[in-house]
Length: 458
Picture 1 (cartoon, rainbow, N blue to C red):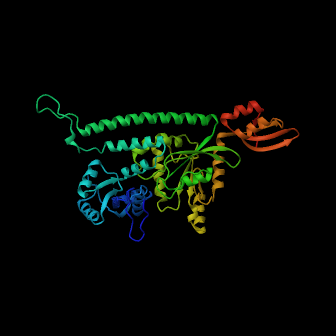
Picture 2 (picture 1 turned 120 degrees about the horizontal axis):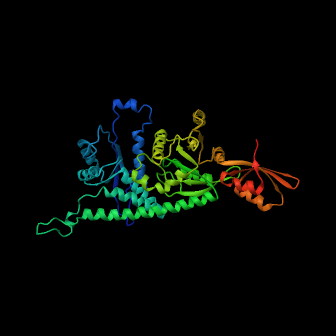
Picture 3 (picture 1 turned 120 degrees about the vertical axis):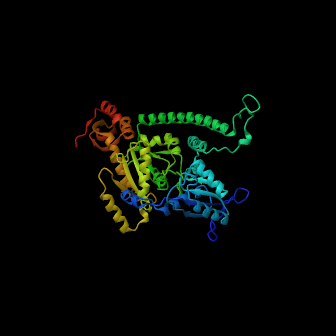
């Protein structure tokens, strides 16, 4: 793909043979806020139109589309036929002809009829927000599981978009006599084939869910507690994941840079272990097809003991993004106000000057005790140790503190404790080690019976 031409605007993406593939225009058809809506939205984070448009353009660039132009098209109401008003449709037609546009991206959810009517009016391909996100996911899915989930979402979306475009391909006419009705039309055949493929994909995804359940059961036998990262796309989850686990997951300043879930071991300050899960980023108006299709992947979030909600606190729409993530969590059956299970991580504080950081710390200090937040920079490592300590403290709620005395010559027993428990203190008295350990509740009986451990008295 050719680089952007900074002098003459964005270059057109080229195919392998060097042929130009055309330019894209991104339209933001956002409803004007009426007077009566002001009070209703006074207590809510209202997304800025310019930020919404820039995000839509970023989505287009995420699949290497060359954005030739972008504009906000404010509307007072949604038109059933074309979403936009007649005058706005004609105005955009002039831009399409004048800028050699071959694809129009509408930052909204279009009905099949609206999409077809706009394509006819503009004589060009039209892609709505749902279709664009599906295209990105199709490009980014690398594992078999991710590909299955994306294909299922895409087929469910495509099934509603079939129109009677191939009536000349109807099968031979059926019924009695010369004037018998037509046989199966092409659109019916397409729907039947898509339906069959959807059924097969759903069965394969059920197998994926069963495999994941087996993996979780295996971790529970170890057992490792699970910490899951969630957040708006491009909030810095993968960078934070790499920082916490010393992994090498792809991290880029790009929407949906990573898609497939990743699990890595997380080392805690006092020697404990947990599993850290990086999940797909959320976004405003996330297509319901994707939430349903990726439920197998997002089950890691459902089963997590702690959820880290990573926020790009430097983003101008940080509050609106927080509400979008909370909305998706509710779709998954997770209450974002549930309390101790969710920790907010305010990322990218390295983008603020010292005075602004002090203001953020004051804001964090005023947060309710049940909804704490932690200021970090995944890029520089600032605040990471404090976050790890908080994770360890929360996980300690699932553990019991025990005192025991073990013969110094029992190397196998001491080694087992270091591998399976968090050793808080270890002192040699004569030929025995007096130890205080913290163990998961699932291993309490083993430690009590093998080492004659007793509950720790503070």
